Structure formats: C-alpha cells, structure tokens
Amino acid sequence: ASELGSLPSNLSWMTIQQLQQLFRRKQLSPVELTRHFLKRIERLDKVLHAYITVDTEGALLQAKQAEAAIMQGKPLGALHGIPVSIKDLYMTKGVRTTQGSMIYQNHIPDKGPAGAFERKPTVLTPRRSA
Image (cartoon, rainbow, N blue to C red):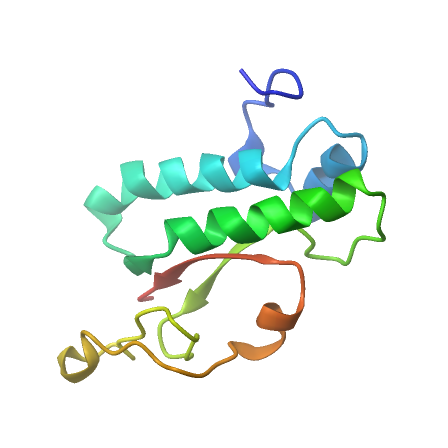
C-alpha cells in the first residue's frame, strides 16, 4: 500500500499525462513510481537482460527531489518525476557507462550530462543496452 493511498495496478502502462495527473492530485509520488519501475526492472531483467547498470540510489534521490517540488506546488515540466532510462552510449557523470563495449566495462565518466535530462527534474533510472 502507498503512503498516499493504494497505487493503481496498471502503473506500467499509464501514459505520462496520466501519471502527471496522479502527481498533481497527490495520488502518486515520483518516489513510489520510481520504486515500482525499479522492482519491475529487477524482476524482468533476469530474463530480458536489457539493462547494463541500474542506478537505484541516484534514481531514488532524484525522485525525492522531484517529489519535494511537487509537494511545494512548483510548476511541473512534461517529464517531471517520470523515470526514464538512457541508452548506455551517453555519458552520465558518476554512473558506469560502458558504451556497449567490454573495453569500457568499468568506465565511470567524470563528466556528463546525458543531454537535457540532467538539467530537468526527470528521474534517471538505469542504463539500458538496447
């Protein structure tokens, strides 16, 4: 059960607009949504092998920051609090970026950002391979 009530059972299939509406009504928080998708990744990636690096700690930190902005009534951008994954080819500061190559299997860039996402209150979750 959610701190804000019971979570919808179809979170994985809702549109961004539907999720944003739940955020605005305080029926769902970015932290809850991020945890939902992190659990889903943990469960399904054992079979799919779609993710190279999952930055759970970073995703939850960004989700908490997005949630704080929502609770303060700040204006929301289109992807505010929405978890997204970034292709492993794009450098993200402090997060392992393999660029799909064994040569870079332990590469942690000291610079980023991964495009506009790092400057917006979007929740960056994992690094995906495909």
